[in-house]
Image 1 (cartoon, rainbow, N blue to C red):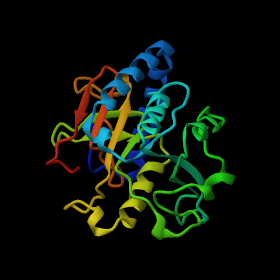
Image 2 (image 1 turned 180 degrees about the vertical axis):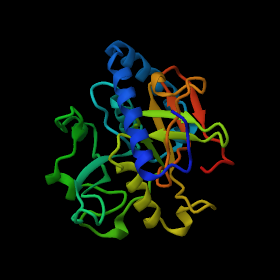
Image 3 (image 1 turned 90 degrees about the vertical axis):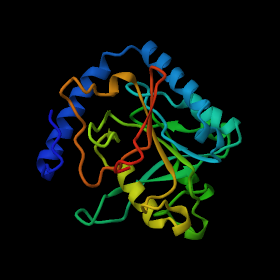
Image 4 (image 1 turned 135 degrees about the vertical axis):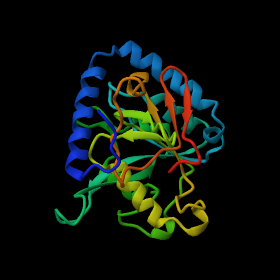
Length: 255
């Protein structure tokens, strides 16, 4: 799958769909033992990573039972370390079809370990925040009811993905998401809501974006495969891998 930065939207969408299907087949062959051991290596690397250690407000995805790095140990460690932990909350946007996404993702706070353990799993097996408790939680950026002045900026976001690679020219790490655009649109809204002092010199919010991946999710440069990206796909700052590696995006790239 060749990378063409000038792909039109239909070709880009088709290329992403094809790669997602290929990755789904590959990841389905992984044993739970492999996923568990790789997740433990990711946690070990992350727990010693200075930006994570120093972070006070961390957003982290809540994992599916298989096919991706398991985040339960990370959530528990972050809460026990005194960090304020935010997790995804999906809700209707109120927008009409064609005017924007009909569902949005916001990040809302967990109160403590008991709160986290009380989350019920959805049809994908992902622990999910009950809509009835959202008004009791702090939020990071808001389409939700509430006072925007109470929005909380994040220090670090830990993201999932389907596939990753390193751009051979810019050395920036590229991410293929699950196809619903939740993270890209959340980051777009987060950027719009950030104050000038919360942004870097290139206009990006100062929040650090890191992804977690099983080693099978990183495409080899010799495989002929690459992650197709469009103008709305957000680059990430780094990638934690299930073999214990940490890869950082080049700072002089588009990141």
